[in-house]
Image 1 (tube, helix red, strand yellow):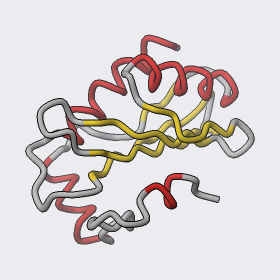
Image 2 (cartoon, rainbow, N blue to C red):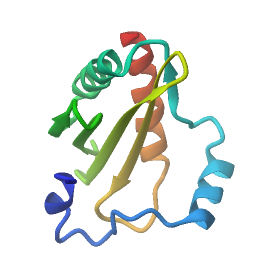
Image 3 (cartoon, rainbow, N blue to C red):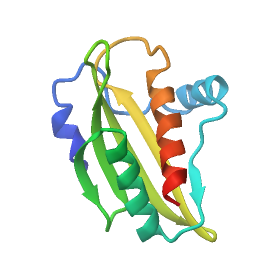
Length: 129
C-alpha cells in the first residue's frame, strides 16, 4: 500500500509520525506550512502534484491517481541524504486539498531542509493550478 516503505527498510529514522506532541511542535515552528487548497478537481490536482514533484527533481517511487497519492525521494545537495516525500490529494469544497510530508531517512536534526522543500513544492504546485 505504501511503496516508499520498502525503500526505507533499513533507515534509522522511522516513517511514523510522532503523534500530537510532535505535530504541535511542528505547527509552532512552521506556522506557514499547511495543506494547499486548489480550485481544481482532484484528478487535475493529482496531475499538478506530480508535475510539481518532477519539476523539483524528485525521484518518483509511485504515482497512483486512483488513491490520490504520490511517493517520491529527494537527495540533499550537500550531504547526499535521502529524504522521502508523500503527497496526498483529496477532494475538498470547491476543489482539492493537497498535503505533503517530507522526512529524512537518517539524521537526528533537521536544519529546516524538509520545511524548505515543502515551501518550494507548494509554490511549484500553485503554479500548476
